Image: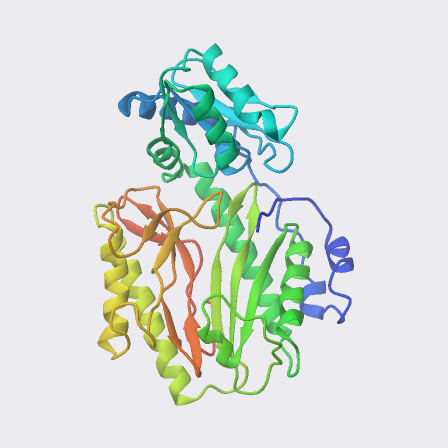
Length: 392
């Protein structure tokens, strides 16, 4: 889901809470946390464009094309549109970026081709950002038969994977707000509430805190589904409770998961929760400059398979990657997963979220986001100390 920062008062946020329940006191007490936020400056965006030009030269690319969305916002400060209307950004290796806004989607490829010819790139090597829709690229290919169309990843990912201090600060605030929203919602847990009730409380908390966000809430045996379940669920004593998602601050995303038990945890629940925390710790320790992305995944997976789960990606165990890049998109380059030999560099940001999923029983996921420094990884949020204490 796409989220945008917007200013609201606590009272206004509460007024939009779900009609199905009264807003809990823990949420009514919240106040906006948006004061002092520093947006990305135009000077920083120009530095980004200059880095993109350098990467284009290194990769023999004459221009980069991106449709409305995160990459356009990263380089130009506007998201444009990508529905019935189309907005396209052309970032040439030489010269200033050009925003292309055709009168209709059917003419987008044609107008784009005209813009590229005008910039002297009509017969060159044109890189296409990964989210640009096929019908635009197909028309561009027909209009510019002598041009070579290639992936823009060396430029877009090459820029966006490494976060600046200003980006780190925005990610930090988004994570802090998410923890505040979760704390308020967890305090309001009650027997019989549905997963929709829980999610509505988190939504109301985000609004009261001054941002837009959301969360997936899962109870009981459904916590074994990494992406949740639409099956109706009502909270009962002894249920595992898993909440996952985040909010947006100036476009920058948080992504946090907390897992606890409603009531007293069983010995089995505590044992598996502790295993998950050890796996999360192992990934965090392995996330150092120069380490490969797959080695971070392997460190977490070794803890889980060493316990007897798995092996590999089999269930019960860890069925997905240990983490993903995060920034202007909740999931972006690059991924902490087997086969990814990309080496970690300072400024990269990831989720750290190995999961232990036991179908038919329950699942545990602990997720905190981290950024890489010269000395190793740093977490944006304090980890959960124990199954009884979801917040540090």
